[in-house]
Image 1 (tube, each protein chain N blue to C red):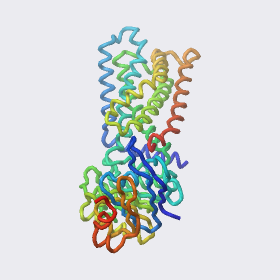
Image 2: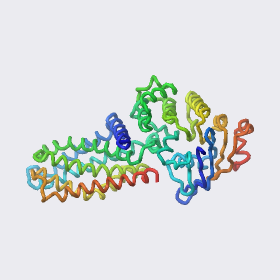
Image 3: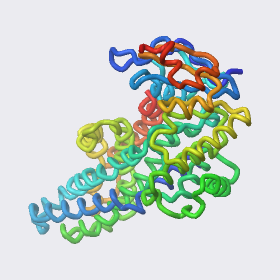
Length: 226
Length: 232
């Protein structure tokens, strides 16, 4: 219970600070919408091939926009040496990590939920046909992105070129999860339900999230303190 | 039980030994002034004692425990170079946040008490980014004292403080010492530090050149330790 209380305190602090400044969420949302708009010029929305790659387009946008949120996660602690105060506090590094991951997840999923209707309009796609399944895939893919992004955000917090380093570290590690999320999203947007044909990707997403969440929880103390 | 016991502590930055076989003890109720030139290793030593970094060799104990243990962290208050409060939050929100992290019984009430003690009660709802430098520093002091730590680690606490903040900090430190709490402060402001200190440790290029009780000679002449044990 103490772990969850600490986690919620950290998540609440991060969300409050972000909603007050709106630095990351505004940048991320604007970036997602601009990329969706630019891609819509590059691909003809009336063509079937565009719909066939719609999941890929969607997740490229989410991954790029998401890193803008994730970059701020630990960078927010740098001014005034706030990270020292958090590391000094009697909370577990795992609770600190999970609190930050939870706040990042909420922010990234908010950007995705605003982007989805825009995606539907620009690409002439009826994305609501498998709404709940798509929501599940969004949640699983976003949690994977969030966990990887948050741990690498902690790792790169003291690097001068962290804005560049974070995507370079996150995207290669995210490849399996992105592949799964892209394939599933393409099927679901096309109206195909989750079935034995595509559930291997769903299992991959679940396994990816479980493995990297566990790894991050184990490693975060070393990442923060050495 | 000793408040702080550092035994044979080494710390390397690459190949460079920032700390070399440091042995340092502080008893409960002691105020130790950690002095030394820039780059002597004061901040590194304080960060290791606070649990922000690990020693390359040797070990540090806080009241018998490892500094990273939850119980140790609950007993330590740290004031570093940064104020360690959030610009986007109000003074009250900042202190309440840390009150919750330290699991205080009533974080909001305790936060208000400390805002009053540091003269910030009228600015409690103001965002920290709108505060003057002196107000920010007083808030940092309140944040460090909020959970009534048994051990206070202060890194250059008087640097860049305005006179009101110095007065607040000195008053709180004197009160902490009368309550039997331990204070270790690294400082270049010898006069202010030696007024409070019961003990003095001089760091020279990562080694302890002197460690002992503060004497009347030291209080009368703040440069006395450097003159007798420093590199000149």
